[in-house]
Image 1: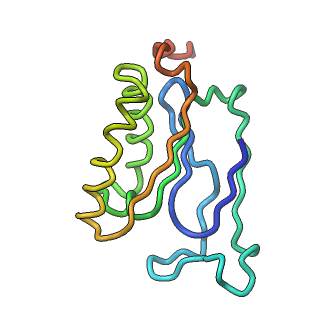
Image 2: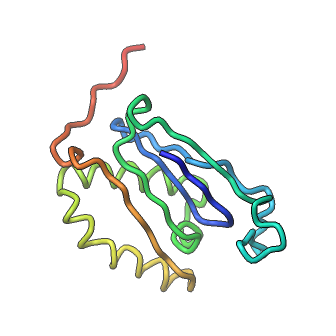
Length: 139
């Protein structure tokens, strides 16, 4: 899976074990006021990329969201880990259709709290609904 991003927002991948990771590196130019954008003179300078081997890394779900979703969270640094873990758990226990039905309400709350746009895309393996959490790795 290839990720390309300019500007703020989040791209997160989650393994079958519920371990979440950032799909692209942080943008050092983001300062909370200024955002890298396609309309800047040289937008490719701000392009960040990431490649994830979903099979080798055991990725079962990825989500992309605008900054309005993350900035409204109390735990600004770790919310994406918890969100990824919960999405995988909900996919297993309640199904992907249930997640799709809940998503509008989940996005409405941060929009009201933070006053910013909140959009999210969730990509999940279809077999997530029928999987169980793997046992912890021996170590």
